[in-house]
Image 1 (tube, rainbow, N blue to C red):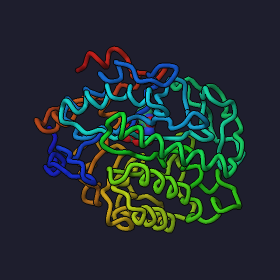
Image 2 (cartoon, rainbow, N blue to C red):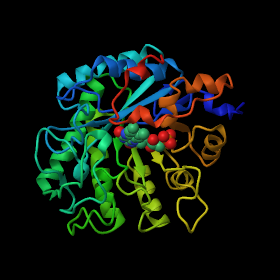
Image 3 (tube, rainbow, N blue to C red):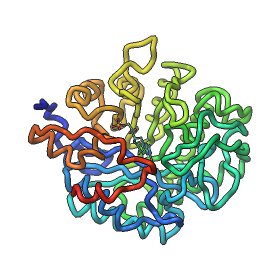
Length: 367
Ligand SMILES: Cc1cc2nc3c(=O)[nH]c(=O)nc-3n(C[C@H](O)[C@H](O)[C@H](O)COP(=O)(O)O)c2cc1C
């Protein structure tokens, strides 16, 4: 039997969007779109299960933003034109039908692109081969290619891509909000990270300079979509560097969260492997607690191993407003209902994601 912090099942208003509870599905790439990046019916059925199972908010998988360098994987969905945006209506309608809300996560893969049908060579802050190996479950193989360093024009195109994708998401696809993917090693995080950003122009150097591309994207998206719920996802770890800690430690947290707070965001989504643990070896505060301290004006979504009531309560005490659940939501699309009725959760079975992370028909029969 589980005990539950009863606050988790209370309604919450995130930047003007009313959620029926504080449980969100974390963004999870499932490489199940068509080759041309269009959403298919199975994806709508997959997403619908979470809303039907009681999640107040669903955050989509990372959606690529432009027809240049943003696409990261084969079969990743895009939102680069009206047709791709229109295809997302099947997903947003299916979630709205169960009084759920849905935010689009928009992302640019940068150097971690391992499948892009528009360009051959990835673009990144600096021409450095990424650490690690491509992800097999997203159709990757071997080392990452060496990207080329982005020009000012490339950077302007990337910013414009985010703004246009957000506009399409709100105006055509009927999303309730936008999450800009600034985490996990993708383009915006590559600019933020000391060792992947070796630029000596205005986009590189101090942590303030390195976060400035994220801030420019926020500004452009805000200008494009107005006062819709808008947030940024932030992490220390990366898909290709799990253990990474910000080089400047807590000073980085102060600059990053402080400047996001001042950027007029509705929310920040903080993710760590185990989000309740101290963010840095030298301190006691979790990244959630640091975000709460340095960004007092924004709503906070916390993610990372938070499917037990004990850990969820711990980060809520640290200041989180919403708990996002990843793998445990795959195993339990009805997790909020189970928590409410004190039912046990099913264990996450990693074979769902193998050999390819696409949506399996067995998942759809769980509805
Ligand atoms: C299959 C899979 C795909 C993921 N894709 C994304 C993604 O597209 N965007 C993102 O920000 N995080 C992505 N993540 C990370 C999750 O959002 C989350 O941070 C991670 O699973 C840890 O949360 P959990 O312990 O609740 O599973 C993915 C995780 C998994 C397991």
